[in-house]
Length: 289
Image (cartoon, rainbow, N blue to C red; front, side):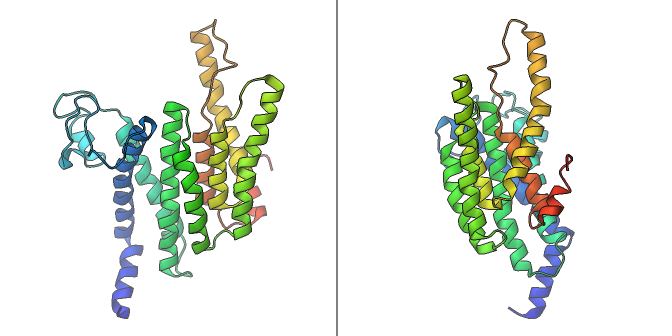
């Protein structure tokens, strides 16, 4: 490829047009993420049939399936039966667009020109889908309190393999991350069960942490667990107190709070802020340090 063409492509990627493409690309995959969130817990294919209205089962035309825009133009209702469309759909699409923008900004726009553009784009190709997967897992966990093996287990192998190409995390660190990520949750769950006779953390959380460890390495796990626990506590306590006020006779001890979204958010923060930093730099972000 001529040097002039390569220079033009690099300018295009690093310009505002590259950012616009990243946002649009993320919104498009956010639409597919919505399909996964709706269908996977029901055991349905994410490929066939095409998009349909959940209320009237009418196929959705392409012009009614444009991320975010179609929801606004249709005023949140199906064109055929006028049934309300869940606000989750544009929310997921906007979050996916935001995640792709942040990934592109972190690994291309903010990374400078010291590294080859191909390597920077390769990081976007790996870490962008990783964040989108965390988004899908979080949405399913919030709705169904379920982290599906059909998503986490293949992803562990996939992102472990992708990491060998990028080289951001060493082979040993990734392997240790898989073992420790799952092992920590297993030990906590087993200890809690023996002390109380009830299940605590689900092993799905362990597989999620194994995925984080495979992708970001064992160093990411203490941060993910600590920050995830703090975020979960800050959100869960007001929710539990509100529920206790509404239902005074209901015990809140056995209320299940999905932990996956908080672990996912903590892992996303680590990826976008701390990946590649030294231990001292990571500890500087910990409020208690």
